[in-house]
Image 1 (cartoon, helix red, strand yellow):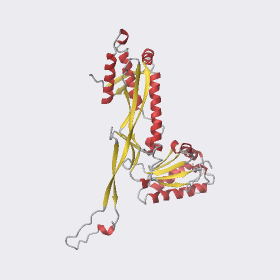
Image 2 (cartoon, rainbow, N blue to C red):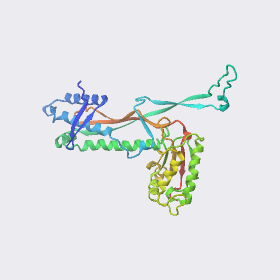
Image 3 (spheres, rainbow, N blue to C red):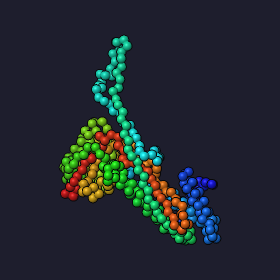
Image 4 (tube, helix red, strand yellow):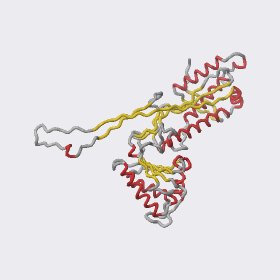
Amino acid sequence: MKLVDTLKIELGGQVEEFRLNECEMMALAEAQNAVKGWVANPMDARLNDVGFDQIITTLSAVETRVARQKNLQYSVEDAIDVVTGVGAWKEQGVFFRSFANGGDDLDSWRIDLAQQGATKAQANASVDRQTYPYMFLAKMIAYTRVELEQAATSGIWSAIEEKSFARRREYDLRYAQLVFQGTTDGVFPGLLSLPGVYTEADTIITMKLFKMSDAQFQVALQTLFPASYTNAQLTEKPNRFLIPELDRIGLSTTWSAVGIGFSQSRTRLEQLEIAFRNYTGDGESRVIGNNFANAVLNGGVDIYTMYRKDPFELKVENPVPFGIYPGVSVDGFNFQNTALSQTSGVVAKYLQQHMYIKNSTPDA
């Protein structure tokens, strides 16, 4: 079976070149061999550059392009690191955490050089093991020989390509929903639904930030950051402040009316970003908005969260990235292919570095 590692296809008047990985090369070869096996009459014998072989090759190029496109519409990678290619096809992942057990102080590190054979203290620490499950996501699309022939005849890839892109857009939306909200049964937690995270409810933020007066806004900032640092036991500071997208939009267009504590030439969003960076001491810290934090998608509750974006401590694993696996038709007329992905929920090692601030009256 000869493997093709590069496809050069004319799409929309332009020649595009696609490099195939080993899995894609095998799938293409199997599909082409299957096509040759269908030859039962002269109408099926068109296996030249403008025939049925070209249809299969073009389809494979379209599927490769769809599978590899980058969709940043839902800001997944702005909010959390996605680790790909680790743990493929396994049922669960594992991580280890180390803890100091207490009892150590500065004096336990001191040695008395005046004593002969001075002893050294041993570190008092332990390690625990945590596992988390993986799941598979899959969805099929179907098309007929008529659609394949029409695509080859017209030279314009329409129906089948649109089906592939529509499925990819839906996958991106549902994957983002998983990353931010998790599954409804709680087995796979999201960034906004981690169990055991400290939550401030209706105390610090009692209305949308952009609706606050200058004085209320200033008090909220003075309260938010110490609460986060105290929750982290004065150890780590966050580098992400995720807020509802509707509030971010309001902050970006609202100016200070009185100028208490900040210049009237700044928007509320600019002041929030400056205050957050000053608090963290990290110039790369960011305030980001997200639709999944809006009250309309959370039972009427706006969710704000401060956390540390760090792939060693907080991540989503994507062992098998989105890929399209062509199926073989049993009758030569009806076709289907399946998109498959393997993923975890949000994996958080240190929950004390995460804090939720909820507002159940966002429209008050």
